[in-house]
Length: 525
Image (cartoon, rainbow, N blue to C red; front, side, top):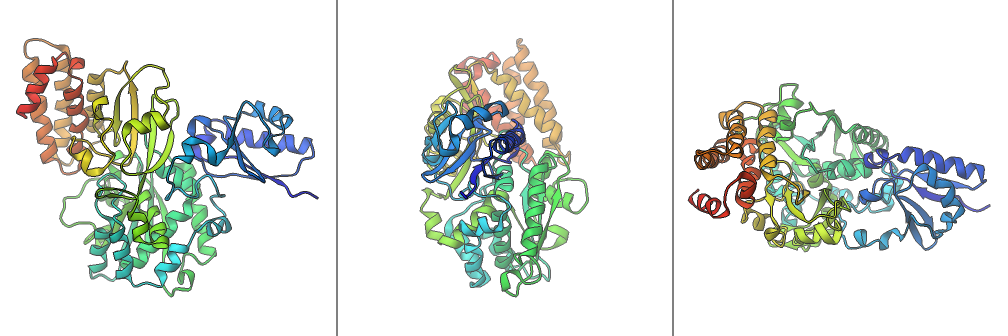
């Protein structure tokens, strides 16, 4: 009897949103009707979101991709011999040869879309636990040095060196320490954390376990935004299986070290993505930003030394420990080492996830991967780094995606999210939205953010309305942004001016201002 043919149908939330469950059910039904033996695997998404549901067939030559597949397509696909990789209008050939995937450098996302996310055997057979086993044989200081030497910087937006944060927690003298994963992925146009938690939850668990060994902690929390029910379910099941397998508990992997963790559902506030506000929420309080110092590394969760990293930061650690700091450090440019999963969203033909080493350009992401605008109109602006990121005009699309290079153009890479807009976008409206977003999401603790954002919305409305005082209002808006940049307690108020000023500087005509006057005003401030 022939072995069942493996068919992969994503269980990722993006695929579920376009009927992946119905496609899966249709495949099982038609296979049963035709007496064909299949083995259905619900994998993570490959990140080619415009092709979801992307169904893959395991053939002797490799996995062959078909998509986007709808339930009604399934009988015809069987007729076309798709179980043998047969030709069909929805066939894209071997998955690994699709240019969108072939031209990536997948380190953190190496298993996503390839394995069954909840299979312990799949995880270990594809390199899982190699980093953890090496870490067990090292001292805490050696683990910290490995992460420090890799050049890994926080992937949540601030880009602070991960190894320095860990070194600070290791040096802190306390009976109890914690490792907290910030999975409150609230930026518009970002979905890398969700995709990884749903598609390879064990790599996050392993990364947190290595962090525990590095800083001598014993307990961890994954703080996941409430809007991610599928990620929460995947993590909870993965944690339960890992605990039964001895990957978590009183004696992890026979190391004599204890580590356990739990998932906490977020409070539904954007501000809880800020690390100190997140800690307040974890403690059962309202999500308000804490003043620093003390730093969370010294006095964090429940007043104890705490490592706080985001999902991608922690999920990057296993490959660093498995292959060594130099292997990871050799990817990237300048002080931006390793890879980042860039998330392409907005008005693009081919939206999805692209993991690449630092140093490529926005133009490459927009056209080589994103294939230009979905509307067919010229792209005009791209917001990089979430709702608080700058709007970049085409003149800046060839700047290398590198933390320092982006600081040089008053922008940020942040979590790697980008949202593209075509030439129909009204940039004055987008600037207003940024200020309004800050006003709505502010925790209210500091005056520059709480009052400044509200006054900012009012001032933009006055500029757009025109009148003899327009230039005075532009000057007032710039002064207000300067106050928010320098005086806000956290990044919400401190970065809200980025999209406003970039829109004002690069698209003055949308505010009714001449380019020459805008340049003069920018030079003065």
